[in-house]
Image (cartoon, rainbow, N blue to C red; front, side, top):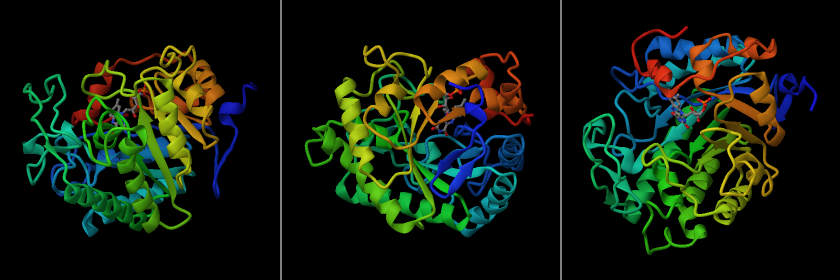
Length: 356
Ligand SMILES: Cc1cc2nc3c(=O)[nH]c(=O)nc-3n(C[C@H](O)[C@H](O)[C@H](O)COP(=O)(O)O)c2cc1C
């Protein structure tokens, strides 16, 4: 593969991305009030666009005021005030020549009562993660099994949040189906024990994701991009493989392939890890079943790793490297030695310390 591939343009519907590098979604927990992020957190996104990233994701935006929030200080886009806070950020990201993408999310069983205004914890089934919540030091509460009414309410939250993103001018929206949050909880038998139409077969476990994608697609303009993020791991009980095997994972990708999506984003710990004992990576297994544009992330930290990751994907996303180094894109372009950062180093994202 040519050395210029990473800095070659990529067409995503009507957009031409200037290179193959995006800023991965990163939760910052910075909102003091009104579910609006701190100004320096918003400025950080603009700076990464100005410094060469072709696409910039927001943090995961919480889809309602009842049960969606999973961490303190998360952001929403459900009120005019919140829309007005994001609008200039989006305008500046676009002015810098990058795409602005809002990721939207419901935490499901990863929540706890104190972080949600309505104090409700809901999930496909009344099963809590096995590990304790690292933020409270307590076990996660056992969630309420979602009723059909709950399902409809949650879908409405995704719809309203998508409308907010459109009103703020975002180029695209990503539905967060990864990392063991609510949609991911439906996809995995580990957390979905339902016996109705939302549980059991892969098709049934996928139904909730399908309904959200369809409902969001129906309210956004044709030109607004729609992405879906998926992973085989969750932030709690991290070692659990959320999909039983390659066939089950590829069956879900096959279902996503039929949706009105503009890309699939695959999140991994390390992009080069083999998946499901197949001898191939998550990206390669995804590519086998869909021709949709594909984004990949996971320990992409320098030019060599970015180029290797692009062998089975269209764009690379960086979280920790681009978080800690404002000049990361330039460093990659110049082939500088760039370190692999630990998760602990990235914890600065959750402090009030201004990032470079
Ligand atoms: C501080 C921080 C916050 C994150 N928040 C989110 C998030 O809101 N949504 C999401 O999908 N992933 C989130 N992630 C995961 C990253 O998007 C990415 O998938 C992961 O860090 C692996 O990429 P990396 O090796 O480049 O860091 C977060 C990661 C970090 C370090």
